[in-house]
Image 1 (spheres, rainbow, N blue to C red):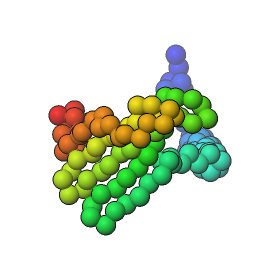
Image 2 (image 1 turned 30 degrees about the vertical axis):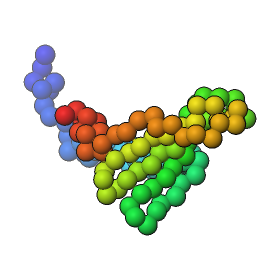
Image 3 (image 1 turned 180 degrees about the vertical axis):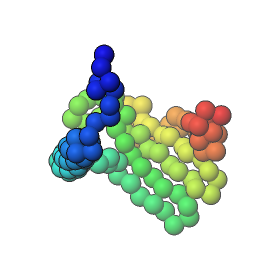
Length: 118
């Protein structure tokens, strides 16, 4: 190995390499922004939602059960004052049953604590 092999690159070569890397980074950033603008908008929709004046909200969502043309729905009742969520359903909704059955009651602070791993 000669002493020439250990010499640092000339300043002009470093400037050229820096310019190429900078241009590549700007080009990649621009392409990323353009592609991100083309992503589809994935909105989440509840079946029907209603917010009451006393701190309650009602939301219906499909349960994933029942016939495809008329799936069974769940009714979620959010009590903001009591920090509770109540989940109701009709067992045989398409057979004409009209009784709402309480499926689950959740205390929101406990639910959020579990979600955080606590």
